[in-house]
Structures are given as C-alpha cells and as structure tokens.
Amino acid sequence: MADRSLDGHIIKSIRITPVETYFGSPGKGRIVGRNARMENYGLNQREWLLQVTTNSDLTGLSNARPAMNRGGIADIYDDFQDLIGQRLADFFVISGGRVTAINPRWSDLIDRYGFLDVALFDLIGQSLGQPAYTLLGDKVRDRVEGYDSSLYFQDLVNPAEGAYAVAVEAAKAVEKGWRALKLKLGRPGKWFEPYAGTRRDIEVVESVRATVGDEVKILVDANNGYDGRLDLLEDFVRGISDLDVMWMEEMVTENVADYRRLREWRDRYTPQTMLVDGESHKGRQTIYWQLMEQGLLDAIQPDMLHMGFWQFHVLVRDIEDSGMDTLIAPHNYNAAYLGLRADIQFGAVTQRFVIAEDSTLDFELYHGPEYEFADGSYTVPDSPGLAVSIDQDLYDRVYKQHETIIS
Figure (cartoon, rainbow, N blue to C red):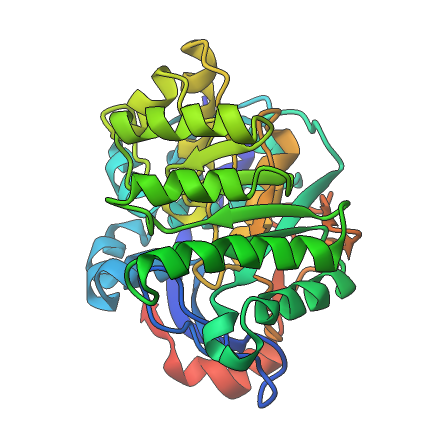
C-alpha cells in the first residue's frame, strides 16, 4: 500500500535544460585528454538538468544526459507526456517509509530512463521528510569514498612531459583532497604502436605511484584497449605487479575466455587487484551475469543514471540471492554532479558498495552543502530527498531560456 501522505502530490511539469561546466574554472579549465577509444574530452561537459515539479511546489532533480547520449530531447518529450497529472504515490509501492516494489505500469519507462527514478526518489523523500537513501534501507556508512576519474591521456595533451604529465595531474588531484585516482589506460593500438603503448601504460602507473605515494589508491581503466592483444595484456599485468593497483577495469571486451586468462594473470602477478566491469549491465541476460557467476568479476559497474535507485537495489538483491560475492561500484561519468549525489545516497545503504566515481566537475547552479568533501570522501546528508537545490536566480538569468517544458 502506498503511503497516504503522497496522495496530494501530483506531477504538473517537467523541465529539461542543458547546463554547462568546465574541468576547472571557466576560462581557466584544463583539457581532459583522450582515452583508448575517443578524442579529447576537452575543457567542458554538459548535464541535462531534469526538474520534475508537483502541484505542491516540490521539485525533484536528476540528469537526463543518458537519454540525450542515445537519442534526443524529442524522444524524452514524447515519452514523458504520460507523467503529467500522475500522483507521486503511483510509481512505487511504499510501506513503512521504504520502497518495496515498482508499479508495473511504470516499470518499462523507468527501465529505459533510470535517471527518472532519481528525480522521483528525490520527490518522494521530500514528501515524506526523509533522505532518499532511507527509501531503500538503513544507513550502513556515514561517509562515501570517491575517486577522481578525470585522469585521461594527459601525455598526449602535454607530449613533452610523457608519462609524467599524468602524474602532474594526479598530484593536483591529491592536493584537492582525493585519495583514490583512476588512470585511463589502453594505449596499445589506436594512439600508440602496441608495444610502445603497453610500455607507456606501465610507465604512467609507475610515475603516478612514485608521485602520490603509497597511501593513495590507484585504479586503472583500459576501455577495452587490449582487445586482441592478450600477450600485451599479460605484459601489462606483470608490469604493475609491485604498484598496488586497486582495480583493473575494462581491460578487454567482456568474454569468458579472455576474462579467465586475465584472472589467471591477476592471481599470479597482483592478487590484491580487483577485476571490475559492467557499466553497460542491464540484467541477468548479459555477459556480465555470466562473468559474475563464474567468479570473474569482483565488482560490477552499471551506470548510476542508467539504472536509478530501484533497479540498482534489485540488482544488489539478485546478486545476494544468487550467493555471489560480487561488489558494486557504479559507473558515473556523464558530467554527473547529480549522478554522484545519487551514488552517495545509494552507497549509504548498500553494504556491497565499493567507491563512487567522481568526474570532479563542479556546477555553479547546484547547491548541496551537506555533501561535505574531505580526505577523499563525502558526508551522507540527512536532509529530505536528494539534498540538492538549484540557484534559481542564476537559472532564470542564464539557463531558463534554453529549457524544454512538458506540462
């Protein structure tokens, strides 16, 4: 049975607005370089702010960028028309302040647009006067660790510095407070000759470790850059054996045979290092579920904004029910200030949660002062909902002219 206190809250409008920010201060931003597959990320990124407003003048926030990446605003406009006039009470089954099920009428829509779930949880939490995380369970941690995921191929942005260019950025990140850093690797094949690329990947990890010291966690992500070169992948794993790497992510495109080899080399050369993958996960009928069943993934990484709170909660429950040991480490790039805050809320109640991906972007438009960042982790807020608001004056002055309204 739905909580009766939600009955009076009816969705009256939805706004979708592009919001820009920079890696660093506007006008002084740093260029974030290539990864194994793509050109430079550049100076700036964009969120697509989703605002869902009720007749009671509550507004739930999320980031619609996943939908914009795969389609366009016309698709969202059409698909969200049916949300107008719907009661907040009708999307989920809520009992005792907990979401216990999803209304089948809305399950397909929320499966396609997981970020919508974040805005709904924000609204439900505000309506009930409780933090979003409490809709899923009891708090298991007061702070959630994050890692800086903006350390790309800076050696190609500043080629004269070589591998040390990444170490320079890593040192700056540590100065700003991060205690875990993810390094983009996978240089063999596209941007480098394969053997030279492998050597550079190892040199980058070596240089960063020497620069930041032993206490900072180093994670690596190859964006499948070692596809077809398992010989070089073994060389890489051997080469980082004494560098205390926390995890290896997407070293090759997901398949059981290659992951068996990768696990064998991990176990031989750097047994403490986790194998993680799965940012594209969408359920049991995927290669990721097969990898988990065979013990080839230590953590799975579905994207926070693709999944949303409820689907992530169901995934954790399914993993636990299956008796697997796999942990949860949500993917969250997508210029995701709001995705990071959702990630923190989810991490607050999820025992299997590992660490939150932080693209390090700040947006002047958003206010979330309770998410206090210190010594590499964020405080979990206790205010209702997502505990993020927007600067309405700034929005009206700069962004309102670009909004799309569904009402």
